[in-house]
Length: 251
Image (tube, rainbow, N blue to C red; front, side, top):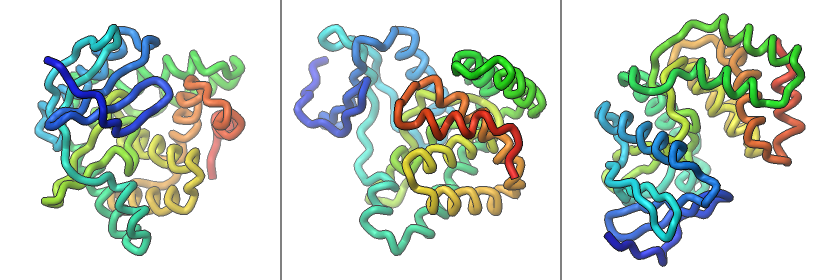
C-alpha cells in the first residue's frame, strides 16, 4: 500500500507522524530497532483488544527503509488543544482527563509487560550512583504488583476528543500493567517537566480525590518515575530529574 506523506501531524526528534485519509502513519527514524517498533505495535494491539477506546491498528511495515506503524485516523482535537483554546474550561477538561484514566485502569492488562520489571531496568540504566539506585530498587520492590492497564505517557496531548464527544487514547509505546498510582506519578511528572505546575497540582488533586488515593502514596512513586525519565537523557530535564530521583522521601 502506498501512503501520501504530505500532511505532517507532528514531528518529534525520532519520529514523524503523517495523516493520509483514514490512516495515521507514524514513521520512525533509523535509530529505532525492529523490536522497539514491534513492541509498540504489540502494546497498541493489546490495548485495542481490551475494548478501551483506542484507534485501530492496521499494519506495521517499512517505508523507504524506515519502520512505520499504521493506525486509524481519529477526527477531532486533543485535550491539550481544547485546553489551550478555552482556558476557562480547564477544570472541566481535567475532570474528563482523570475520569478517562481511571476508566483505563479498570481494563485487563495481563499480556502487557509489568511496570515494576520495566522500572527496575530503567533504574539500572539511569546513571545514578549505586547508593541511590539501591534505594530506588528497594522502594520499587516494596510496592504491590498491581495489574492495572497503565499508559505510561498519559497526557492531554494523547487524548483525542471527536466531534461526537468520544474520547480516544493514542500513543501506547510505554504501556504496561501495574500500579495506577505509578501511572499517575508519571503523568504528574510530565506536567512538571513541561513547566505546568498549576496543571500538575490540579491533575494530582483530582486523581487522588476521584480514585480515592492518598496523595502521599502517589508521591512515593515520583522518585522512580524521575529515574526512569533520566534514561532519555534530555539535557534540559536532567537537573530537575536528578533532584527528584535523589530525594527518597516526599512530604
